[in-house]
Image (cartoon, rainbow, N blue to C red; front, side, top):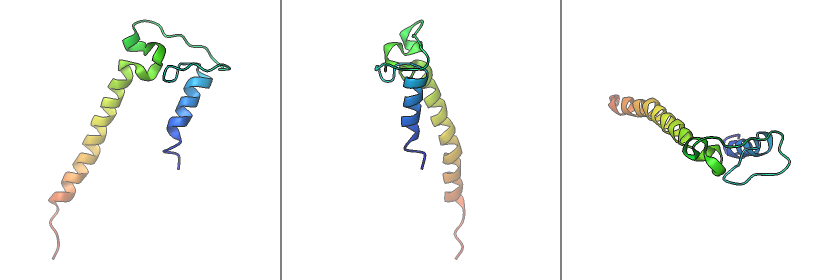
Length: 84
């Protein structure tokens, strides 16, 4: 199962490949070096990309999409008549 490993893989890629701060911690020995630029609200500042408003917007869009997709299915299942 990849589901529970995905956050770890994303954190490793963010920290060791891209060199970005992961929850405010910068690791040594990373492949690329990134530095936050601009307003900390948009770049995440020293907390890393997951601390930015852009990520919050993406999460809210994904939540809305999931509610639309799975909310409709649940409503359709409740409307179906039960055969006796």
